[in-house]
Amino acid sequence: MKTLVIIPSRLSATRLPGKPLLKINGLSMISHVFKKAEEANIGEVFVATEDQEIIDDVQKNGGQAILTKDNHKTGTDRIYEAFKKLGKLDIELVMNLQGDEPLMDIEDIRNLHGQMIITKSQLGTLASKIIDDRFHSKENVVKVITNKSLDVSKFPEAINFLRKTDISVTNIYHHLGIYCYRAETLKNFVSYSQSQNEIENKLEQLRALDNDIKINVALAKKSPIGVDTNEDFVAIKKIMEYKPE
Image 1 (cartoon, rainbow, N blue to C red):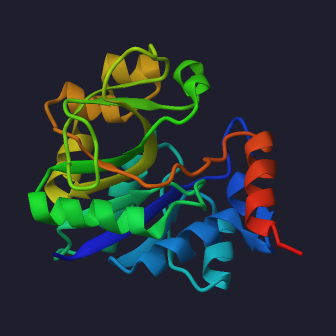
Image 2 (image 1 turned 180 degrees about the horizontal axis):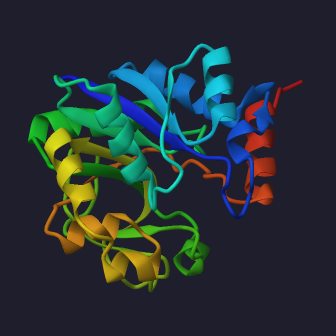
């Protein structure tokens, strides 16, 4: 099954402007992510961006990038434009990797891809076990509730995605920003208007659920830090640049 990996990226993030080009070990964050995607070896990798500076950086570091419009409401809309522009008609699966998660585990990426092939699901994503109870009240940590418990062999359906949750809810996990779409599902997804639920919660995956697109969830072994703030960036930089004595 032929797969394309597309990483949406832009410089104008409100909380940490310019974050894709912030350097860790002398390499931009976006270039760390595309190199991780290439290492996963599931398909050709492209960065989709509205910024020429990102294109220049990715190409300088040996990657492929494509320029997209600057008026997209979500990363998925940007991915679909790039997918259409690339014109690769034999692609069956499109993987959407976030450009601000350089610590995403390669085996977790491969596991999601494998589950999509085995189950022929419409749309898949990853979630990890919540190890810190404070996550339940943190709005920047997105949670997913599934219809069955997660383990490495299961691929249950998502019931809901939330920003704040009650600790007593069962089958609740930390949602990771990675999606794998069947090409037809991606096309359908972007044809729908943003749902009220999506706008209110600022979670584009709710557009899928609101339009009866099933989302299956694979268990991730690791829970990488996403970079939303300068504090996150400092934390991730320490991890990636740490050298034992």
